[in-house]
Structures are given as C-alpha cells and as structure tokens.
Length: 430
Ligand code: HSE
Image 1 (spheres, helix red, strand yellow):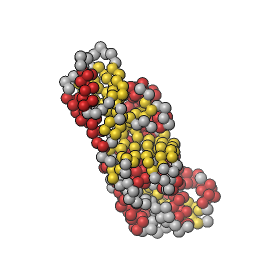
Image 2 (cartoon, rainbow, N blue to C red):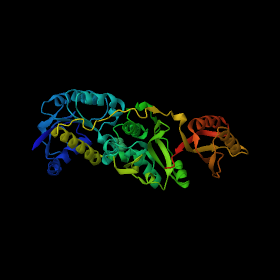
Image 3 (cartoon, helix red, strand yellow):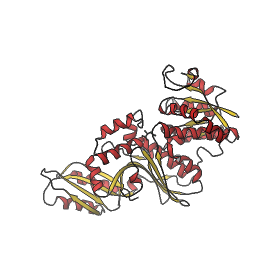
Image 4 (cartoon, helix red, strand yellow):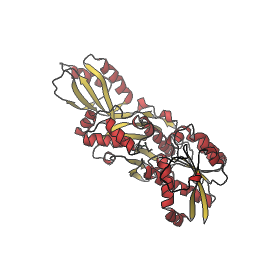
C-alpha cells in the first residue's frame, strides 16, 4: 500500500486534532482510499511541550523550513495561521511542487490569487476546506457540487464565535464580554478575538466564497465589514419583538451583473432557517440557477470540525498523488463572469433604526420628513413611553438605498432633539 508522508506545521488545537484523528481512524482511511497516511514530521515553536499525543517525540522539529524542504515529505499541512510566517512556507512548498493543505483564511483572502497561480505553475495543489466553515464542505460544494451552476446568492453564518455570542445574548440575556470569554475557553475564537467580533474573519471567509462563486479572486478590502462589538441587548430584544433575529452574515449577491459582498450584523426573519442556526454552528445558504436553494449546516469552529476538513483535504491530495492528477480540480479556476463589485452606497436594503429622542411635539414629524425627503418610506414605528427625556424610538423602513439612509442619518444626527448616535442595522428578508 502506498504510504504518504505528511509534514505538519503547527500543532495547536487543530494540529493536535489532525494527529489524533489520522491515527485513530487510520484503518478506515486506508480501507477507503487504499493509502497509508503517516504524520512524518511536525514543526512547532516549542518542541519540549507535552501535547498529550501518543506520537514519537523525535518527529517534532523547531525548523519549519527544513520540514518543507525534506525530500520525504509529500504533503505540507499549514496550521499556524496568520500571514507573515505561513506565506513563505507555503510558497516554498508550492515552488517545489509539493501540495499544501491549509486552514488559513486570512492568508488566502489576502494572497489567494498569487498562491493559486503558483500552485498552477508548479502543477501542485492547495486544498483549503478548513478555511471556511470547516465541518460542512462548502468549498468542495462550490467547486465541484455546484460547478455547473451560476451562483445567484450566498448567505453565510461563518463565524462560530459570533454566532455563539449572539445566541447566548438573545436566548439568555447574557453579557457580550462574558460569552466571548466562554467562546475563547471552548476554542472557537481566534488568537486575536478582534478578528471574530469585528467581522474580519467573516469578511475573509466571504472573500473566499465570493471568489469561488464568481471566478475572480476579489480584493478582501472591497468587502464591507461591520462586527458585533457594539450590538446591545436592547437591539436584540427589539428585533425579536418585531419578529427578527440578529445574525452576523457574510452576504454575497448578484445585482444586475455586479457583486455585492458584505459582512455585518443583520436582522433576519425569526422564522427563517438561517435564524434557527444557533450557538457555534455555521450555515451557508446558496442559490444556484440549476440547484435552486440549498443550505449546509454544521460546526465550523473548534478542533474536531476543522480537523475533519483538514483530514479530508489530506486524503484528496493523497489520492491526487496516487493517481498523478494534481490540479485535476484547480484550487481556484479564474473566469471573468462577474468581476465588478457593487459599491456599498448603491446597495438596497430595509433598515432598523433606533433613535434616542427628546419627548417634544413635532420631533417624530421632523424625523419622518427627513426620511421622506430622502425617498425612504417607513414601514413601522415603535415609541416606548419613558420617564426620562430620552425616548427610544425604533423605526423599520421599506427598501431604501444605502446612500439615502446615510444622508438622512447625517441630517437626523444634527437635530438637537436627537441624543447620541443612531443605531442602524440592515434587514435581510431571507
Ligand atoms: N474563530 C473562528 C470562528 C474559527 O469562530 O468561527 C473558525 O474559523
């Protein structure tokens, strides 16, 4: 039976999972692909550290470059994350024609185009299922399952940490900071949790999905990003009273030949399937012109779901080695179908606005006039009685242009009867 040697760079949460499951499921893996997978070398910062793994300590090295260059390493698995250290190692592997498996969403979001070109030029592979919603194989689904479809839209709950926080705030009224700490303890959050809660992790994953859907590796900076750091319990509660649930979504949509790409919190109808995706679970809703609607659901953060994706990628690469068919399914196939990004001011949406207003005659009338003058129609208004002179007023609009909302909000903010900053959230009628 052919043996394939794996060089693992990084042995943290996911790396340790890969070692554990490649060993534990070795009989099944061998039976299914007629190959033997061997973890031959592991590069880590601290070789002495006890990782609780039953593996020969002598395979640990502190020298990742030597691992990449070793002639007996067939597959390089990069699990250190980040860009600065990971990128040169991945480039070096690809230049030697060695296939790479990675979970590194930021590396691909920022440098995917360059790395995929390098893989193609060197007849090598990059597999990256674990970079987006690990447990649910969305990359393979887009690249292979939906290869004959034009993609009309994708909605993704792509960050387990944020979904966990939003669920616990909505269902138990828990505080943001407390739930974030718990998500960190459970191993869902990034080393820098700002990447999760400020929406960047979702944006990186949105960039990868949009690029696969539309055939151009988009600039990650062209994605509009907002996180959940400033979401308040009262908005989650108000949304719920109006029949909505707040989720952090990656949104990718075709608009008359242009692509919308955004990552931000959004009110979705509480009756929708997406609203029912709770805790650390991820989900991706896709609409393709042949398949229609499809939704994939499962865990995307944490050791085991990510490991499951990495192991599947290793096996795909091993099969390519066995059949001498590197690049049969390109890591990314550029095709110019829809390469223009729709600028954010041009998108249309419904909006939730929370204003803190003085309780005086004509205040609401003035707000309604400003919105009306900006061509924005109000769908509902809720004003709650209060003893204080700061009345919370919640307005939900009909569909309006983002540019119009922005200019109306500027005028509303200038009114002396408006306290603080208005809260603006978009609504997606999924
Ligand atoms: N921090 C990420 C999340 C891990 O919470 O989803 C998986 O990419």
